[in-house]
Image (cartoon, rainbow over all chains, first blue to last red; front, side, top):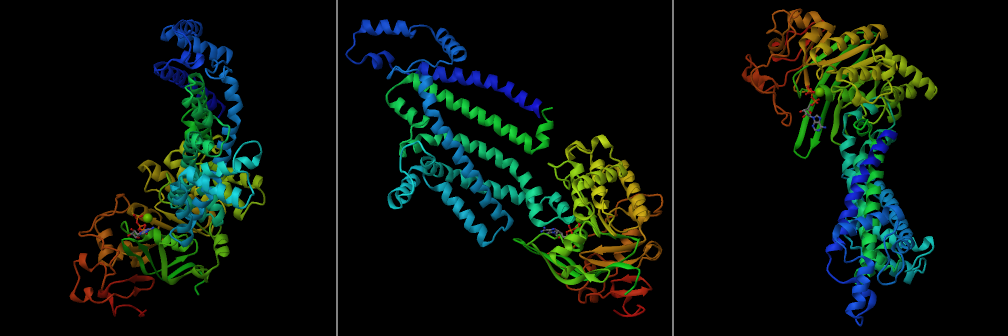
Length: 309
Length: 328
Ligand SMILES: Nc1ncnc2c1ncn2[C@@H]1O[C@H](COP(=O)(O)OP(=O)(O)OP(=O)(O)O)[C@@H](O)[C@H]1O
Ligand SMILES: [Mg+2]
């Protein structure tokens, strides 16, 4: 298992390199003049030229890429914001916890709720219970996030006053955004769990387990769920990625100081270095989640494990 | 009741209800299994052999299948009426089953030793440690080396997996072993080994066995009694001698008559002209009539009864009506 993790970590190096090059190149070819943003419309061409020279904007593509990589890898430096002048790394560090917490909480919510609905449906297929939970799943998938967010705010903040509508700081602030982002994933995971369980429950080894005289509930959990979980892990991992993307909308609705909101603000303020840094960090998070999914996968399925050793 | 009989299946009928219609998989099936003996259940694919085995074990798929009538008597106790709890204690300890396809019948995410230990823990072992120790012993007994018992099924060949299947089935020394085509999915050379192992263990554990098979070589090799199954019913039942030297039902004759010397040839069933009937249509009259060379007008009209033409030799064919020693 350790060998597997080591191998998978090594495989991440080229992925990371690719991500850095692509993100940098995307920003490189984006039109627009950063010096105009920094110095303002009223600055003279000489002032701007001097700043360009200073920031290295006049260097060639490979020189700039080299500098970018050097600063990132050896100094953990993503440059300074064009708008605020602050180091991008500090800004991202300040914003990351909100997004990461929300992503983790909402995935946890989605996995727990989704799996419960899915298992219930699969154990009693084509019954009322199954229909009810699959309808719930469908509603969850279909509801647009921003709209659901507003509805939840109306109910829990405005009407009942139980939870704060916007902001960030306490665990109470996380609940509504996490539920908002998590419901669609819960729906997808519920449907995935159900179909995966239904397939597994008719497998021969389930009959073998029953033939041993094992209790039905243990047959379903120990023999069924463990096998059904394998595709569910993949789905949950993908959903985690989708959540990072969905953060843009949800953080705006709930006015949360996260990476998503930072990106939206930076794009509209043409703060290129911040956008670049944000995209990079999100891409890295995505790769790390993928790594985690692969490790879980190998943990759940010995066949995967042995294909690596 | 006969002291010598351990299991009796009486008038068993069951069907599967699917979106495409109802499949009458087992129709009015009867047989007895004597203590310590081997009964071979022979029949073409789709005859309902596996369904019968699952009905005895109480592991028919729900809610697709339904038992319409009948009794499964284990030493006089009707298992079809037994509680869930009672069945759980019967399965794996009194009656065990070996499944048809060893590639799919083991849990892919569990170590083989744990899979064997599971059944021991349920019925025999007092602790997990004891179960693990006993599992190791049983696995050694079926020829799995000690350094491999903690591996997963995908690391095993088909033959080794079936040995694990046998170990699981025999771990709690059941009184009855149902083996559902245990060698069909294996290579010919491995088949012989696995069969040899089963014969040896059967003798050692002194259990009764229902051997489900297509392979007449296996029948000749292991059977004490034979039940020939066609379209969900047993068309002929008798001991070894009855079936091999005095087969009466046209279907049995078709199956066995074509093999010149059973002791030498190991042949698969020889196909009889025609198709097995569509199990979704409950046939009127004898199910075999459309393929039968001796069929008369009446065979298409009247369902044959079960006629005992000599003691212990039953035939389900209208030709023998009136010849039976006592009508049932
Ligand atoms: N789960 C199920 N749902 C619907 N029909 C089924 C199901 N299982 C079996 N059947 C049908 O019941 C009939 C008997 O099947 P069964 O598996 O008992 O046959 P078999 O004699 O064991 O055949 P084989 O030699 O191929 O294993 C077949 O027509 C089959 O299609
Ligand atoms: Mg079968």
